[in-house]
Length: 442
Image (cartoon, rainbow, N blue to C red; front, side, top):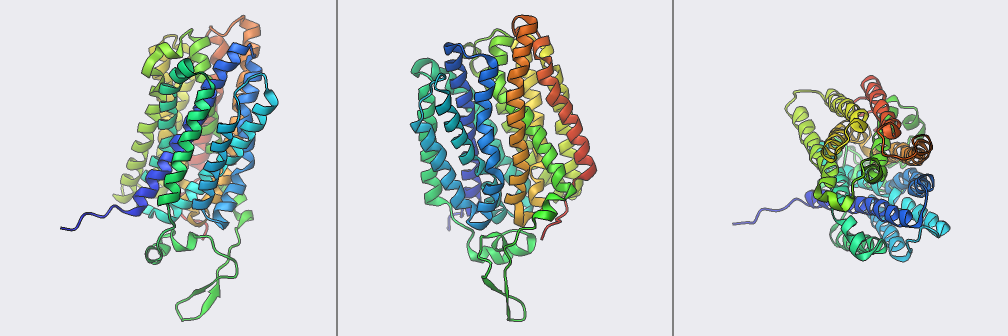
């Protein structure tokens, strides 16, 4: 009997899933390690917010260049280079809150390197994944972010406690190097035999990086030049693209504020110790992992069974996810117990992840050939949300501390969570008005 062959595209999706998992272990890890080190050094909340947001400046700068590089060079190669760069930086840089310049430069470098990751991943997935598998493949890949965040929240506080904050950097660098080895060994471009079947459905050979002068065969036996021009004006003027951009901004505003400030909320707002909370502190991110995959499977089911069109499916899941999340975010300061705060933040982040089956897959619906480019544009907005949200939250908390004398009252945190809640309602309305599931870029 012949053994069942494991499709190569599944291996590619699995490796991209692990890549996002490792990246978010790094991001959560820095937040945890730096918070401990900064608190020990007496750094104020505003200064902490500035350092925590520095990563996103570098991340914002490399989103569109990352999409361009993935389109021209190849997502597979760019993704590998990104991992090597940020892993090396983590390994070499000391974690000392008083050496601000070194930390700022290091976080900028890590941000620039990781900014290439998601445009590269979308380019790779657009090459390998057929349309009827897109929702669950993208959802599985991006759910690695949340599993990584959950694992980081579970394991890294103990690592910091027993081995010190610097040990987190070493562990993150080791994970990056291990992933790079497996990607270098097993990742390839799609075989040409698969391209011929794939091109008609909007992925495959036509998405591989090529030179502008390269010739391809046409039906009458002649040749024609393959264009490599990217329709920048059409992309930037497209309402469906802007619908994705607005929702990406809101998603990441909420995610990055919670990811960077939830540890502070638990410790200063609720007077809880992260170490003593045990595994419960990972539940919000683990819930994101579960709901992200539920959203992907549900979206593909609604589309393949013709229960809803692609457009209606994207709008339905995006709206449900963002509206429920907005309610949970605005209710979060009301809950003053560990169980209540974990439940509310889990609902907020879980339904945000469900909403990704709407806007986050939409890149490949409307522009499969330029998925990395569109992802780069929309993720730039998401990164700006990180810069604005994380830094502004630090300033809001510093002002609240001056007004209420400490950060233990619900009033001192209300504005922090109401802002992303209102943004979720606004963004879902924009997506309902302007998004589409039809292919608009050839």
